[in-house]
Image (tube, rainbow, N blue to C red; front, side, top):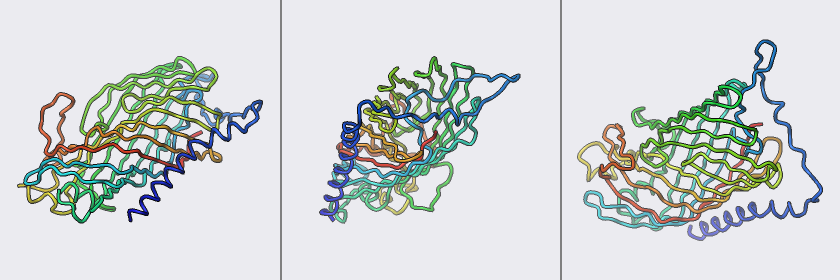
Length: 372
C-alpha cells in the first residue's frame, strides 16, 4: 500500500510539473509573429432595449479575465503530514501521521437568467476528503479513528445574482448552504445542522479593464461562523498580458496571459467549512454525557499556489494547481442541537478540542466547461 501511494504521489507530482512547464515549451516553439485571434464572445450577449435604443449596463466581466467555470470535475491530493488531536475527556493529546488526503471535487454554476440587466446563476458542489493514516489499525484517539473510518464530505447549493444599476455601477449577491460531515451518500441530516453563507457587494466598473466592489459576508471560510468585510478587484493591463483577480480575503491571484489559450496564476485561496463528526458510531460516546452528534471540526486552510489553465477545445479548459497547504484552523467545537454561535476574532469561548496539522504540498487537477 505504501509503495502504491509513493508511486501515486510521484506520478501526480510529475504530471502537474509537466502541465506547468508545457505552456512555456509550446510558447517558445511558436512563431513570434503569430497572433492568435481571440473569439468574440460578445455575440453571446443579450441586449435590453428602451424606446428602441440599447440601454447600457455595466458588463459582469472585464477584458482578459479568466473564463468562469460552469461545470468542473476535479481531483484534489494533499501529501503526507501530521495531525495532532488535542486532549479530550479521558484521551490525552496524540499525534498520528496522515499519509494522504484526497478526493473528488465536483462543481456546477449555471446561469438561469442571463440578460444585460440581470444575471442569476444557480450552482452546487460536492467535495470528498479521504484521510489515509499510517498504522490506522493502531489509532486510539477518537478524532483519528473517526477520520480514518469515514470521509469528510460537503454537499452545497448556491446562487449568485449580478444586478447592474447603470453603465458603471452594479450590485452582487451570493447565498450558499452546505451540509458537511462524516456521513455517507445518500445520508441526509436535519436542516438545523446545515451551515449558511451570504455576501453582498456594491461596485464600479469604470472601464473594460477594471472592476471593483466592497461589501460584507457571512462566511465559514475561516472554519467557524464569521462576519467580515470583503473587497473584489479585477484588473487587466492594456496589453492584456498581466492582470489581477481578487476577492479578499477569500482569494487573490496575479494573472499572466501567455496567449488566449494559456494562462498562469500565482496567489492563494482561503478554504474552509464546519464539519459534523461522531455521527456514524460511538467514537466519542465514552466522554460525552449527551448526544454524540454535537461536535464540529472548524476546518480552514490557506492554499498558496501556482495555477496553469489551458483551453483544450471549444469551451473545455484544463486546470492544474500545485502549492503549499497551510493549516489555519482544525479545532473542534461543541454545537448542541446544531445551534451555532459566533466567536469571531475576539471571542473567548473554549474549544472542545484544540488540534494542529503540519503543512504539506498539495495538487489539484480539473476539467472545466467554461462560460463564453
